Length: 529
Image 1 (cartoon, rainbow, N blue to C red):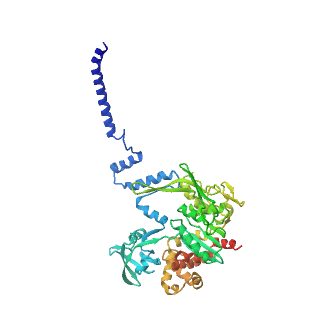
Image 2 (cartoon, rainbow, N blue to C red):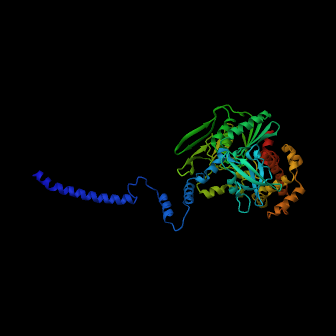
Image 3 (cartoon, rainbow, N blue to C red):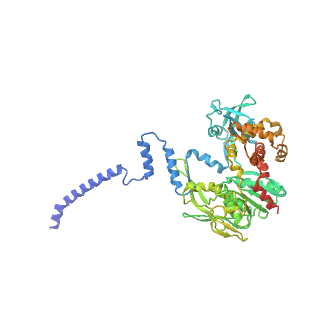
């Protein structure tokens, strides 16, 4: 009986299964073709939106720019220092960390719509080809016009840079005579050590502008030179140093700290605690050390200053540092772009987190620096007292976390630099361009000078130079007739320092400028005690 029933119903069951299978199969096909079901590469809503704009929007849109904007908006919701770098800018962004680029080795400025050679790098490609300060560059490779109202600095820089060993032919004007030179491009160093010299008896001065791949190497070369000249005390200037590679900073800290002292440690939600400790005998573990910082000293600079302060190794002089205690790692993306993503926080040896708050958004975070000028912090030491957690160093000093490195000795900001008239002189490069022209007009005199000491004695700007600067500034619609006497005095001193830069680049500038620098003067006063 059972077998007979199966014989009757089995064909019916098979038929039902087949029909149901066909229906399900048809539905699966529809859903699979629409990309909504069982997709092996499921797209996110952001990718779908990008493709929709590209295929359906009323006008043609550069989707790369939309992608960059969307990526930056997303990252800005995380923290202020995670950034997206488009492929077109990646090489330029990485140059500072590499410490070099490929080019011809000059500094130039657009003056009256003409490219003027301001500096020729010693032993660089342009010097070897015969380029001189004062040359006016006209055309590159017979076809690319370098001068004119439509020219921009970035465009000119792009034409002059290129792969090492490639050639560029330059047509130029020298003393009214047209010339042509062929320059073989090379690797141009971006020096991290601006200046290193004996500033006072047995006292060295060393300024670091960034922490790039060769910063530690440059630092060691400078220290060895200073020690051969009898240095026993050091002023280390980290003002304006926005950071860079933390490893370079910890290697330098190792040269000042003894034993296996902790320099810094990093930690994040997905990154376990990683400690950086001293590993070798340092080149300057015992001598007197003063470290200069200001509101633009950030990141790796704060790692170095914080470690030296926590171990009572150095006196920190200046103003509260920026307050960046986040660690970024760069990740390459498939389209050639990259992301620098915050992966951890760094902490000083005592456990201080120097990162200032950013919970109120990126705009307020970026405005915090200008707020220090408005609330008077940078000019009044008593307003810079931090509200963060207090820590005690082994020597019994109190230090603070939660918003930069607070100096042991406060030095107020020079308010003359806040004057709008002075700011216009710097913003429009009027003062620098005047010094360049003055140098060209008096080349024989300045070329005879061999040291900054000789420059300081023989070039002392006074009323004659002031009148010339006033007339020159008027062409840039800057009226100096009613300038304050204090500001006038400051500008005359700055003219001397800028001439030092024209002659010997950063080294010359700081050898002259430091003579009137209040923070350097305070360090010299203390170090002589």
